[in-house]
Length: 484
Ligand code: GUN
Ligand code: ZN
Image (cartoon, rainbow, N blue to C red):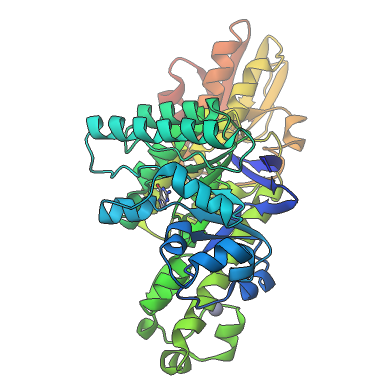
């Protein structure tokens, strides 16, 4: 019953893959809707019909429930919930972090999860609060890691046990956690204790801890972002290499009368119309939905449709190689998401190592696009170009006497030869009217070309519009302007 993960397509550090547990498979990225057995707004059977391959429920709640405990032990969890796909059970750690104590041990909850036939079991990890100091975070991480080692010893290497990555907001502790969890052989690794960060819109910190964990987790590990529920941040998290999300948001928001969209959420009474293609929104008007007796269930259904559609959109973006464009679009929905996006772009040097070489297209979407992995990758490649001993980088494409070779210029990438103009990223790139940030970024490409080709005389020809910028960026370089 070991857990295996295979990546089929990738873009940035995101993957489209296949998670296999025994005979069951789940296409990733995937959303695992959270099922509260006591309060099923949407039944697991209905979820299955919506294409959901995996759900998550709380093993602790089931173990404490007179109604469910015995039935789950005798009939099995799948029968009790009416779901034949993958069921992941959480331990009770969340209750631990909210109520301070739970009446179980880590081995005890794992044995219970095994006995009810859960497909993925979660040990009793300690979700360290982002407010905790370093000493506390260290101590709690040590306890979590001890429990993971114990789980391996008691249940064996092949048991389908998740290895949660903790460490609070401390990057080095998250790195240590990722290293040790992968070292113990866990191939399913949730990144934990991020809910408080997301609830308070701390996306910059979220990027910092997820990137730290991903630096040391095995690339073969399926990475779950524990408690990530709002669809507006799925693209950002996927770009970092998160493969699974679990969402109670669809139900929690519905309970609060909130309507999810990929750009943010609305109170139902703020909506004059329902901007969505799902069957609920095509059947009801905003006014009818507000007053419907089953309003909460209808809202939950809509919230799920929106969330599942975003997962599909992300999968398609990965196949196309347009995930950066999607991240850019989503992260403009909230200033704190934009902040997280900018933090992610700051990691471009390490993301570039995972990023694929060719994509369907590159759409320039503003200054942030200058920092994308494809620009970095292209400019690093420039050092390997073979050049003549005299080279003109011509902004307008015109040649000039005295230069054996003419390169063209495409911001934000920089200089390119005619052959490179046919391939990614230059060929399928779309750039609006040139502006200063993109020309400055392109000039960095020229600077790299100069520093890696000391044997060539390299000059730039450009119009008077760009001359001051070229001089600023390239210092001593020879500039011919208005060259014909
Ligand atoms: N649900 C949300 N966050 C966490 C976490 O850190 N650990 C566990 N076990 N469940 C969670
Ligand atoms: Zn809808």
